[in-house]
Length: 477
Image 1 (cartoon, rainbow, N blue to C red):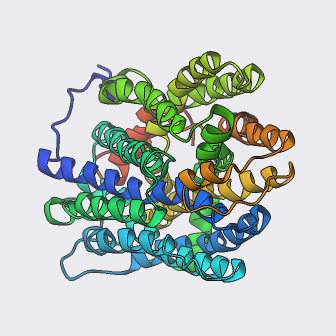
Image 2 (image 1 turned 180 degrees about the vertical axis):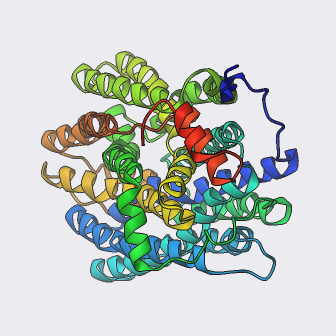
């Protein structure tokens, strides 16, 4: 009689409890609000403080170089530090729930009396502090899933829902923020950010109280590695590099997020138009996300992710050629493109636990801190879409702006040239299309699947013999 495959076995019992899952998801909502505040508004905030767009791009590039060191250092620190409680993630999460909102607010408190150069210095220093804090919030929350449950399907389900909660946080910021700083309300950026910072703290803190790390790493696999082991791990775990290179091509070219408010104001007549497009983009995600756990029981998540990326590339190019002069056609393209964008957004950061299992399966080293640091690094390096978008925009003669809000911008009748508006459209539609194509090409080399990862997890946990697992795998590794 043939040995039953994982697909034939009964569905394993859920290991996590409702309260810990809910607080785990709410953390993502708060964290995303802090991250999206920086991503969506820091560029506009600097550009409206009278700083030249090229100088803003340069300052952001310099600030984000810190990511190269911060994520790698914290990845090692996370693996090496042993808290008295025996938990690895929760103590970091408790601390980060305060530091993320505080540092986010500091970044938007640049004194108006400073020279443009000193404003950029303030931004660079504040960003480095914020980035360190965000790393401290990001690596532990994703690494924690590997200590919450050993079931791959449960991890997929929890992380998929976590992405929905994160998208909800991003959605709240991109809906509330433009309204508060629009020409209709006229609130300043620091006032708007202060409101969001309080909400961020309230949402992030509960997981440090109700979360539970029930799975402890096996003795001999955790933290006992040196630099040469890290290099061996990164070189051997090829899918870590392949996946996040593709992820970076996609993330770095999401320049439409950088100029969203200016696109709404200059191409469609009002900053409030950004709220409308945000709502439309969110609809497919809201529809699909609650069912993602069930979908992934029938469809391998990487296949769904990969074909969504290809669909995004096709639709993004279609949007660029349709243009922005016909508002109705533009909104239709926004909705169509939102379908693959939503799927990519939900699934995008659910692959690292799989890559961790593969890495331990290949190297016998549990370096989850390093793997999740690479994830955090890729996610934050994606915010280089800001200097990239600004660099492209500067090529088209974008004029520097000094205004405290869009109400002030409207009152001063600050206009841009036709060339600048063409550049704004290229940053909004063309650059993201190119990035999706490049990501699709790289991702063709990623070969992990849910079936094989579950077998690897059982081998890593000592529940299954390696030879028996390899016989059942769909691919050879």
